[in-house]
Image (cartoon, rainbow, N blue to C red; front, top):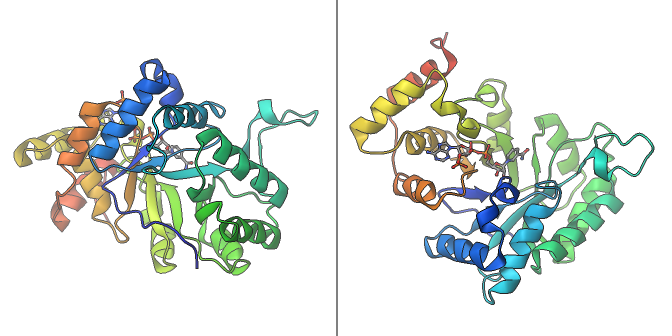
Length: 291
Ligand SMILES: NC(=O)c1ccc[n+]([C@@H]2O[C@H](COP(=O)([O-])OP(=O)(O)OC[C@H]3O[C@@H](n4cnc5c(N)ncnc54)[C@H](OP(=O)(O)O)[C@@H]3O)[C@@H](O)[C@H]2O)c1
């Protein structure tokens, strides 16, 4: 069995934009920010090696080192397998995916070092590679759990056939699937992906749960604003409540690093939607009623 902490949180804090937020770059400032989130009960942080080309993990690690005691309180998700052109050593300088055992083992070690933690709570394959050797990749992921470097492993942006081929080669269970899911991106609700992952016991983590901000500019904007006002909550909180109504209770991975927006989302985290409200938002977002 893996030794994973269950992801019990209203949402995870995505670190994809950290390298762009200069005021959080001094280690003491970021340590204050992380500590404030932990004190609010938000302890899951979502990283990837490619965020800021490793800068995201490095900044976070510097903050953990600057504030003793912090590293033991945070729960870390990180991902690897995307090789950017700048990091491709071949003459092609081509963006590609690498899920070979050697690449994954060195990625896990590098993330542990950058972050300055003893264990990654969850390590995810960021994207599926058509060239993945499932037996070799599965063994590498099992080995990382057995070595205590990783609490659990999961996948991101995989199709059911892709994660099932990997799972069949592993003795540990895949724990999570991080997928693009929001009012702005509803495809996985209608192509069987969400049903398959819930049926297979994977916890859904919804990336870009506000569509990177697009849900506020899209066709559902007016309904979100009106309904939120009626309920005394924020449109963003309502958009996350819409996600949590789904089977498997998808955990949103939010992108804002603004304390006031994070606090507002937390204040709205208990909101529940009835079925007609849920469908009204779906219809507004897609621009047509269901068949
Ligand atoms: N697995 C994958 O392939 C994958 C891909 C992409 C992302 N991710 C993960 O998902 C995380 C979130 O992605 P995302 O940034 O696109 O998520 P998001 O939460 O959907 O969007 C965040 C954006 O919405 C804006 N926003 C506007 N109004 C907001 C409000 N009221 N409350 C909160 N945000 C508001 C934010 O602006 P401000 O920043 O100005 O607040 C920010 O630009 C990333 O950090 C990363 O960890 C994973």
